[in-house]
Image (cartoon, rainbow, N blue to C red):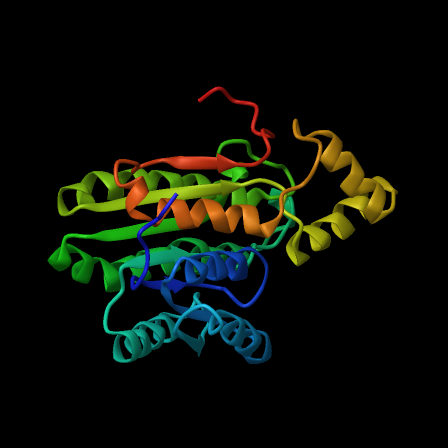
Length: 261
């Protein structure tokens, strides 16, 4: 299937590693010119060089929880690549803990990272998309938006809110030919997954390897996802081929979400 993405400009947040990196590479492989950001300059530069084997790429060291950093990243992208056709929002996971183990400061910091980063980026890129009458907004999220997890109190709360924002923006931006979708990822083999495995295995008195095996056994496909599988999904949602798909929180989770809707 030809995705008709050649020459499009994509901004991909938190793209130095893991799922963000996989998404940036998938878009670049389809011919997108890609602007990425992350906090770690070394990892960011490694990814930028990988992207250059496919298409033009720009990288900005930025923290998406910072309004100033977001504005600088967007400004540099516009100066270097001229416009933004596709936005993929992404951020590192918030603290993994139960409600009474969380501080108010952690809630505030997570709101800036998980929600306000999306709000600020959309406010920067959407006007240009509206003027050109073409745009793709894709928000990386998690299956906990539909199926909360006790140890992921903050993530479960804000991811559900992000799904609501997805639908609201789809309604408001649809007349401008801009699609808005969220990707609810399941258990994907990344450094974040290993961090959670360490935390939860200690709570259960087992090894991280035993915990990961138990997680995989609970997934209908009996395995965890690979970052590239999320990247391929994002590339489709960003493409012309997905032009009639909007307002959806799409579960890419191996079937682990149990709800029918």
